[in-house]
Length: 372
Image (cartoon, rainbow, N blue to C red; front, top):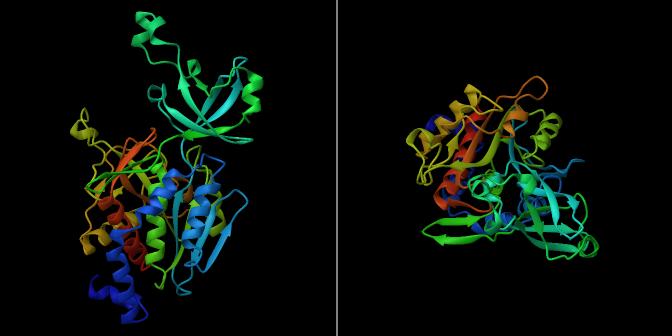
């Protein structure tokens, strides 16, 4: 941090504390990401990840509140005249919702969030029924009896079903199945070695972990920060919209897990992000054009602290920033993300260096934007 930035701290000791936390946080608690990744949290049922965040941050925050929709707010109070910075990371994950129970006990479903049809056949899911968790697998017509034309085509979502090992509708209901029951990919967090990790729901549990670590690192800072675990992002940025309306922040930053395409078959112009290249800064996507002040604060913070970063090259998708920036009279907003391969699928892969550097960038951003 340059000398001209020191004025924002109340004392030299405070500066040392904050700097130390921001730089050692690269050794962040991977256990937190593991717990968040394994948590059950489809849109509209984010209780498990919310309680994990509460346990992590309630002793650090000056105030903790849960609103009627299920968003959780962690407030750090700094100087009275400092602007209010809203950090948002969504707690929900892509999921399935049961829409019909067949006479033979198979379940029909609808997706909650963007799950590509082609990856579903054979995937394991866990559903939360009336009597507890139920394991199931996505079934299809056996390929052995498909025509040549059928084998060449993507199986339509309407032809897929869930097999939970029930022989009838009554047996399925006896197990606790019901219409509206939701399920998520059944994948456990795993360390792959060399700093790589695999798990489900890195979009956006990676962002939740980063936001939590950054919030902890800023706990003695003079900034006004509210870290929000938002709900129902995957189905329309809904929680962020109501959260921002309540807070009326001066600045907003969505903390995300975004798709990396550093894999075979991806052309250079399609490689929106790569692992071990640092946090991903969004210039524009389908929901928001990042405000110039946000872009400047992110880039200045990264360059001042020597944090590698990259730009999201493909303006696809949307984040909570899309809802935050349209709140009331408008909120300068943007997005920073952890690069993750294979998001919106059964499992994603990320790297500890990107997680740690994103924490550092979020912390540095708060300091920079608080001077604007």
